Image (cartoon, rainbow, N blue to C red; front, side, top):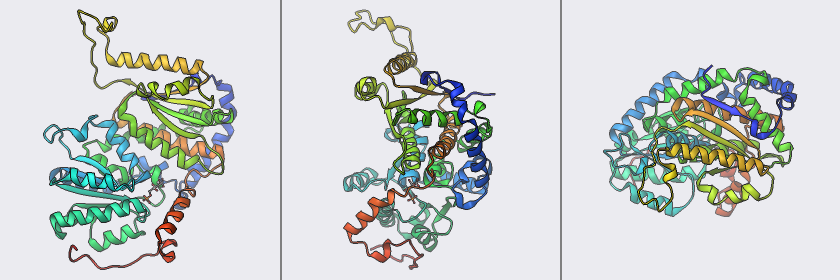
Length: 453
Ligand code: PA5
């Protein structure tokens, strides 16, 4: 079997026989998840998505992505949380590190910029300045269609687009990704006749990267979404084995729970590749929102090494011993750089001559894992043979499934996020939102926009 994503648990010092104590529980959770996945109310649509996704919708996504590539210098992705992190994670992992800074000729696809994920006026004003006269399309993404941050950004940039192009052309540059029937955004899209993509009912925000939520921006950035879905399909089939002994995904879920029970309260996702910055952000949201409830859950956090070895490295090595690390190791770097001879050798680096930077990065990783494990920080290592769309599809599915299983071991519902509502109701009261509008939303009707004010 191809081992394109591999789990190594030796640096956790947890014995296989102890992991296998969970075999029966895992088999039950497995059966339960797969049984419930048939029920549309259970938010388990992501479980079989790689084999059951809507092929027509994916073709429509590819066509829209092609149109955006032809008529836009920028795609503005409006969304927050699960409605943006997955797309950004995949795009930043699989494109040039300085993708958005490249000159138009150097980059074959539009710049992908993100808004609606904060409430900073500086961010939006700076973005408007950056856009300048460039050609623009918008993909606004919100499952509920009522989240304040993207709703405000959409109001601002819809008007921006209408002022720039006029109503008729603006309509052709707005792509809405939302629920099939419900929500304010769905109402607006219907009224204005925008191109619309559907977020399946039974797929929650943080499990939605392989739906149109992630796929339209990812395809626009020129990434092969078929390969991404193929990798996820491979993972779906690979992790269908309910026998814990042969299921690395379930082993990861079990081991993180064993470490949690052993008083480790924080899991740090580690990468040695800056392109994975947003994979870490996506993973933090996936696990944080899924498990952090009822006074329970590992606190998911992340570091980028070697950068953070010069900041948080000290704490990880010698601070409070409540941590463990999960390292994402990319076996083969896409490019490399050889260290050259320097006659003077004043920097005393000639001992590295002939070595590739990737080898040096790997030695930093090996040395760090050894040091941290000796410092009583267990390390789980997940190795991908290469950073590409196929393997990333696999990794995404691996983490989504592991998260659902891990939350079930913990005894929480991994598919809700009731705590997120608390800040919202306070904020709405402070802003004087009419109480009627704070209730669960009922469909509203308006009239199509006639003129730009
Ligand atoms: O995972 C989730 O469900 C959340 O993080 C949502 O994705 C986030 O709150 C955005 O919600 P919406 O897509 O409804 O705007």
